[in-house]
Image 1 (cartoon, rainbow, N blue to C red):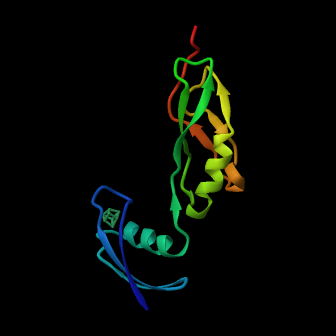
Image 2: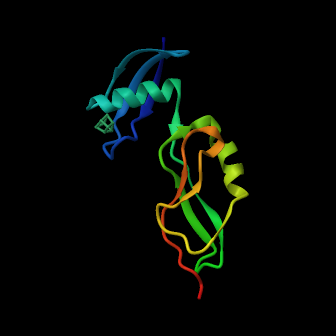
Image 3: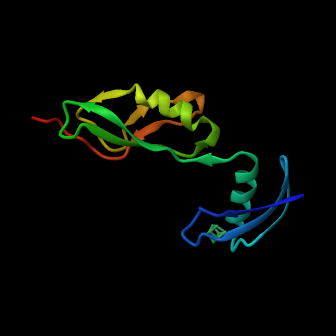
Length: 122
Ligand code: SF4
């Protein structure tokens, strides 16, 4: 089996994980200080996911852009496709933090939500 070294990003400890992997098969995992690291390492080697944070355009608001993020991690391989869909989105003020901006982005079952409120300009 091939040995991969990855950094666990589940918490700020950032443990350095040694993972034995071959295709989708995971062998021994070491270097983790807790079980969450083991779960993360296995997922990272077989089906990596990432949170997506970006902005969308806002019309009529006190700021021209609204920061948004996925409500949870999405498959890493779909990030580019999701960015293309988000790029075409424009919302109108007012927007409240937590509002759903795009439902079920690219069929992932994950929504894009606003991470701050933007009131109207006037
Ligand atoms: S293995 Fe556990 S302690 Fe280490 S970074 Fe991951 S979550 Fe944090």
